[in-house]
Image (cartoon, rainbow, N blue to C red):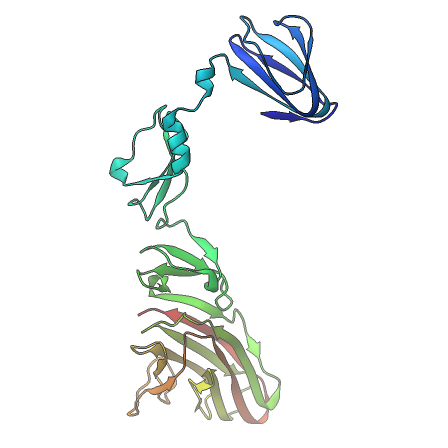
Length: 337
């Protein structure tokens, strides 16, 4: 149905066997035959139907005051009335059923929406009367949408979401495992320094490592973080102290002195061991690389990871003359169980 405002005019063509319905609200409209219909003009102040005619016709509709609307209808009033089945479908809305019960498209179900509950977590179809159209991927299909961690909600098994606000990586992918969101593939990078970070040139050169907030709920039971730090000094002078310090809610993950070593790579794994509030730090000996060994037990702390936890720290080199300490690489990974 088309609408006309005051003084607006429309020229409408109808086929043989069709009619033109004109309705006026708050005023009047004038309908004039141009050809194919009896000559003359008719003033409409309510609702009038023109036709059907045995031949194609053209009529002019002029809204003289108020507003007017017009629509083309068939000549059979019964054909313009919803059947009981059509009314029932409108009242019901979207029909939910199993894939085995999804009917073929037909004139009887034209315009009906179907939600197939056992297909990819729920898939929406629409009947045109001729074909059944899949309107969108199912909930568990890998049509990955982005959201904030706080807006992640729940999902269906296998569903993937891209979390846009973890660290500085907007492409962190989480998969619903049936109970919680886990890092897709078991490990996802949430922060990377993406370049060098230099300290000031001084006898004590301290690099401020990136401050990262771990949002509440990211570290579920047996989930964890891998923190990797690589540094070196830009002068050949031997250092008297060379220390990486990085904390998780104030708890020291590193804190070991490499003394005369100019170049350091170190990593720590922090893991919630069978709880969401008890963390164990793996590889906490005083070695220098990817392999560390010591007789001491792993360090442990208790932090409530259902709430946000702040991480921050420094890498500091001390020497007898001025030098620049550089962080070559800094990464934090989200690790699954």
